[in-house]
Length: 246
Ligand code: GLP
Image (spheres, rainbow, N blue to C red):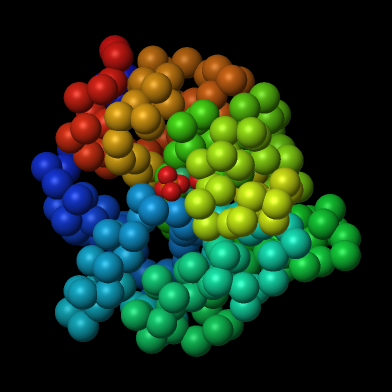
């Protein structure tokens, strides 16, 4: 525990995924219709594999589950493999046998992004309180696509991606096509979720986790919005943990 925040450190990548999956299971067990906000990116992949491997004897009621994506690129269609919907569909929904209506994502092709962000927030709020959000973190401290400088009281909104974020996510795109904007749940949206599991792997994520563990709100590090959350667990790999500067 550091500043009342529970930290779990995994020895290796496989154990990391299993530990996150077990924590997800603990939170969602015995919920008749579990609802969760889930991230994309490379960090959650081992978790999604572990969830799929344990799905037969899982205590999570997957047939009645609803998954909301944390965010979605603007200008990328749902059936484009680079969309976050496509990632969550391939990595979570298919392995767990979910139907399309069980995966809810913002419409990245909307003609009115602001209205779509409001619609998405309303959809999440309809299911409030949401039992669980799993969130990754960018090396600049973004969570979902809440970039440095964002007002912590903002709900789901249209985000302009920071330059570091665009660089980090460029590998999935030919550079000219990398989106500049996205729809993201807000830090206020995340604050209302009952339990948050923050996951990070690698030394490059250590500055963001260090900022959070200092225990003070810092608008340059959006991840520090989580210091005021009442039920936060952090799961790190060894490399990230050893690179923390506390
Ligand atoms: C992306 C996503 C975040 C994710 C983060 C880290 O931009 N919007 O939800 O947590 O970057 O990604 P990765 O796990 O690939 O490092």
